[in-house]
Image 1: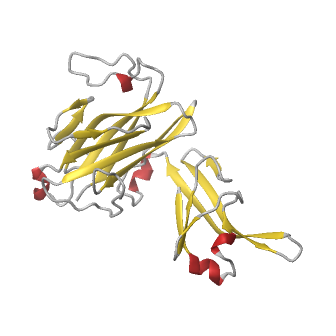
Image 2: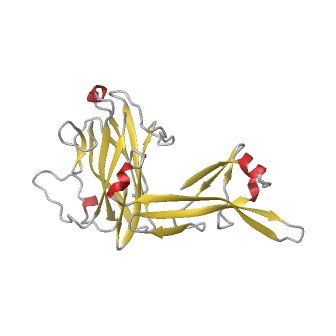
Image 3: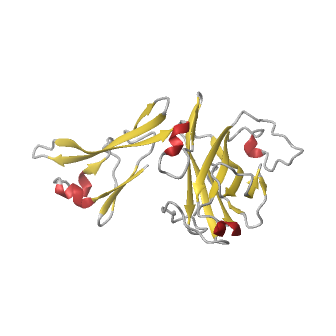
Length: 258
């Protein structure tokens, strides 16, 4: 998680930026001229996790500490915040454009973050929602797997562009289908981290005929050392069948492009 807060807010409360930290006092922010920025792990810095049937909620607190005359430190809670990840059909109506990329199994929990970038360097994320694009423009996509379990990896099984967020077959453009590249403009970018998948494709020409189009991707989460899993099978043609069907976790993410 990431939290960016104006320094002027803390100054108004009588704190310097150097006095600010998370629930764990050792977790300090990155300080700039006008803001402080916290990078908050899901499993560290005092982050608390609450699991319910509807969602997983991660919460933390920004605190301020002021040194006294006798070297004592008084800690005061300044900002409480939480990130809620839904796991229900009703969560698709939340105003985020991206369906909840989350699934939980009894043995593991994970989150998949799906984002567009403005160049192949994958340094500047596109924060606008919806993301307005022109036909034949190159789009850069990164999917990142977050989990407390270190030995997981991410694989792209299928990605399809459609003007209907509920129908990706009638009018659609296949980017990848069952691990097989269908779009000649597709290019993958290798990452040393097996939990990151990043690729490029060109926006199909038919998007100019619709007010909105959507990208649906089915991502598979596997054990990194299970070489018989779907993640290591690559392209599956019509005559091939996955030897591990049903063993991996499939996450479906839908993003609005226009």
